[in-house]
Length: 147
Image 1 (cartoon, one colour):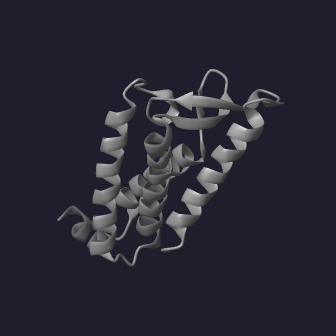
Image 2: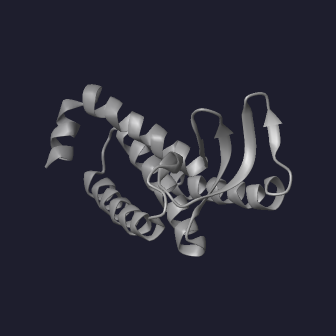
């Protein structure tokens, strides 16, 4: 699934570009859901704002570790590989923003919940898939993961 990471990064960056060029001037309301432009200096879903460079360094470290694990595992588990690809792709998408702007562009606003972007969504879905794998995945594969 080596194509997954670049596709996630491309999709993320294209939606952020669209958000900045279209939604910055004209937010779109879809019932309770809103497409808008926001600059987020925090981590996923706006948490821990005002520490953008720390988050960038930490995200780069985690993405690098996951790339190394993914390469070393060469897992036969598609769910493990997909979960790592989702997390890595989403992390890199947000790292690009932090390097370029010092913040991450968000565009999906759900009142009483948060504002987020494609990268945040992939990191979250990847995290859920990883938990599912760790709970119910192949036991032999999990032994290799924990070494």
